[in-house]
Length: 78
Image (cartoon, rainbow, N blue to C red; front, side, top):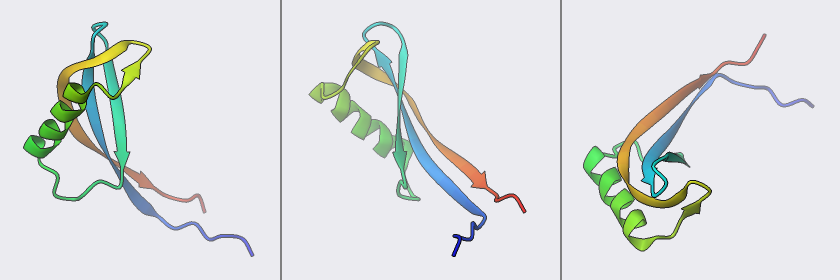
């Protein structure tokens, strides 16, 4: 039996970093908590920058640009 697709809404938390090469790098987090604040996101981002755990083709993560919540509505075709 075929799977029935339902309308749904997806949210992703996008963390936008500055790289050492002067570019931007976005890391998307699926299924974030609903009550994430700017302060909490930026505090977590600073820990990532300080730990130096990510390297990109554009250079190491060097700073915080910002964070945003991306919401996507998914509607199956009839």
